[in-house]
Length: 178
Image (tube, rainbow, N blue to C red; front, side, top):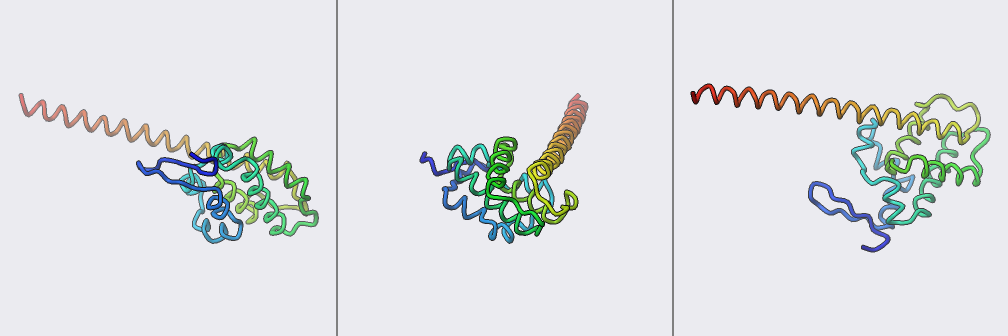
């Protein structure tokens, strides 16, 4: 396996993403249209299962950081605050996002930043900073965790229901055979 490929198994298929395709897929201008259908954290989670950590392993951490930096620069331009992010701040925030939220996918990163642009994490009062941006990601991670808890609870409930119905059918078939 070359260093510029990401391989994942999905429904018994092997899907390959090379470095160029990955970077093109998450170009901020393309993301505006290609990911506009994602409106919930569940959709963001299900859209892309490749984490930042796995992406970094296969296409290189510098490429992933550069992509995050481009999205942060786009955010800084889009929200039109009085004090936009400096190049140093963008680099520092990208590193923090990568190190703290390595388990998120690039789709989820884009989703959080899009929600922030729309003001879903609160008003921006003339300034963007590392604390506010990392807080958005912490809020998203809490929301994401709740999604997994709900899914796990629902799966357990469904499994128990299935087992109960299977038991009922088995008991009925035994009663008929006697």
